[in-house]
Image 1 (cartoon, rainbow, N blue to C red):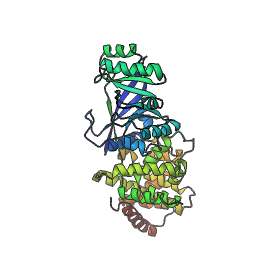
Image 2 (image 1 turned 120 degrees about the horizontal axis):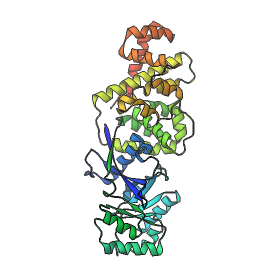
Image 3 (image 1 turned 30 degrees about the vertical axis):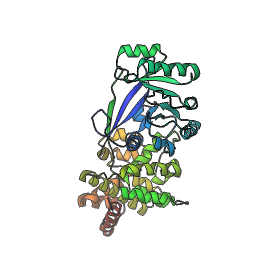
Image 4 (image 1 turned 90 degrees about the vertical axis):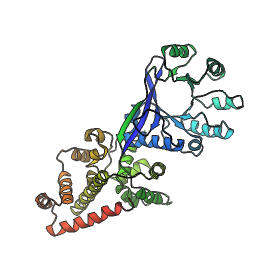
Length: 412
C-alpha cells in the first residue's frame, strides 16, 4: 500500500529552511482531497511518524501540522514529541474559553502553537487570552487585504512581541518584500518552493490482530509476554514499533533484541495511544493485495521457524532469531533498499548483519526457515543436520508453524 505526504518548507528571513508544513495527500495530485479533517490528520501523523519516519520527512526540523478542534480537545496529541510538532489550529476552530484552557495544557507540555490562515473577527472578545498562548500566526497573503494584515500586525507588534508572524502563500518577490518590511520573520509559498509529495510503501495491517492487542492493553495488569506474542504476529505493528523507538527522544543506545524489549522501551502508555490511532486508521476497510499477503506469510513463517530452532538448540536470545525471520523480507514489503530501512531500526548488530546478507551465527537458522517454507529438500536436509534437527521433526515443525501463521491471518 502506497502512502503519501505533502511537504512544504518554511523559510526564515535569511531564506534558510527552518521547518516544514506537512500536508495530507492520498495520491500524487498536489492538492487536498475530499476527506474528513480528523481522518486526514490521523493519516498524516501515521504516515509521517510510522510509515516513513519523521526524521526522514523533516530532517530533524519542526513540522507544522493542522489539527482539528476535536483532536485538540480530546487530548489526541499526548503521544507526540513537542520538539517535533508545531500544532496548527485550523481557521474554523471556534475561539472559546474551553479551547484556551486546553491550549494552556499543551503549552505546559512544551508544544508550540500556531494559528492557521488567521483573520481578526470582531465577534471574538478573548483574543488577548488566546494570543498569550500562541507562538506563530500564519497569514494568507493571497486571501487577505493589506488592511486585514495591518490590523493583525499592529496588534501583535504592540502587545504580543513573542509571536512570530508567518507569511504564507507568498507567490512573488514583491509579496516577499512587503512581508519583510511589515515585520514577518517566516515565509512559505510558491515563490520559494511548491509542496513536494513524498511517497513510501506501507505494510498492510491485520485489523483483527490490532483489536486483540487493544484488548490486551486495556487490562490493568497487562501480560507483557502475551502482548509481545500478539504484536509479533502483526508485521506492520512490529515495524512501526521499532520506527517509533528509533525516532523517539527517549531512545537510548540500547539495541532491540526482542519485541518484548521494544514494548518495555517505549512504555505501555505510549504504545496504547499509537495502537489506538493505528486501529482508527486501519478500520476504514483497506484491503491487502495478494503479493503483500504472500510476503507477510513468508515473513511470519520464517520468524517462527527461526525461533523454534533457536529454542530447540537452547539459544537464550531466541527472540532475536524471531526478529531475523520477521524482518528478512522487509525490503520487499516496503519496496525500499534494505540498507535504507535498517538504518532506521534500532535492531541488534546480529540481526542487522544477518538480514543484510552477512554470514552470522543466525544465518543458518534463516536459511533453514527459507528452505522449509519452500519445502526445498535439497537445502532442508543439510541445514537441518547443521542445526541438529532430526529428520522426523522437520514435517511436524512445518505443520505447527503453518497453523501458527494461519491463525495470525484469521479475519485478515
